[in-house]
Image (cartoon, rainbow, N blue to C red):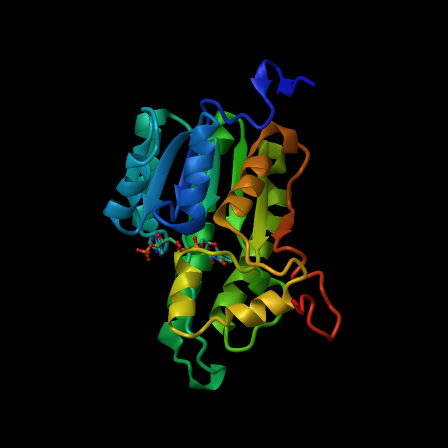
Length: 269
Ligand code: NAP
């Protein structure tokens, strides 16, 4: 059976200009690789220029760009959109994957600085990137914005106070902006990954702050996800096949948040 729409393969992202924050690592990097493989021009954005450049160096073909940006700072975000406009003249897709996780200190022992940095990067950073990008998309006839929420934005995870609040905020940001910007042809969706193998989770595991065995027992599929699982969901939501999908927060969690029984979901052998 032919799998083409309008002469392009289904899911093609040919010639789309795709800005990906946090592209130097984990889910952002996996998205950059997958999107580039489907024909997109990637603008890889990260806190460290070496991280962003490393991703671009790993992509085949010309037409990509690496930029150093702190998404929590408005001047840095404004410089990013100016640089993308100067190079490409438009932004078709934004993937907000920049984010930081937190240690699991009890809430009564946390300080304001800890809370503030996580909110600044995960929530305010997504807000700033959405706003700056949508100003461009409104002028160019529309686009797609994809945010990274989390299972932590859906269910209560003790001691992950700021992270969970930031991700719940990202989900609501997504619904509000989808409702507000649909008239401009801008679709806004989020994915809510479960536990995925990336640098972020590897670090938490190495520090003894993520118990993989417990996660596996709690997961109906009996496994953690891969960065490609999330990148594929993002690629679908970015594609024309998702043209009537906006304002959703799509779980990519192997039924982690669907599961509600009291016993282990995956007891193993
Ligand atoms: P990751 O491997 O740590 O990658 C995140 C990237 O964002 C890093 O390259 C990091 O740079 C960059 N970054 C951090 N602060 C930034 C800032 N202020 N401005 C620009 N870039 C910044 O994390 P990941 O696992 O891919 O996670 C990506 C997103 O998915 C995050 O929003 C995370 O909360 C979310 N998520 C992840 C999982 C999971 O299981 N992995 C699950 C649910 C949701 P540095 O390394 O230099 O700090």
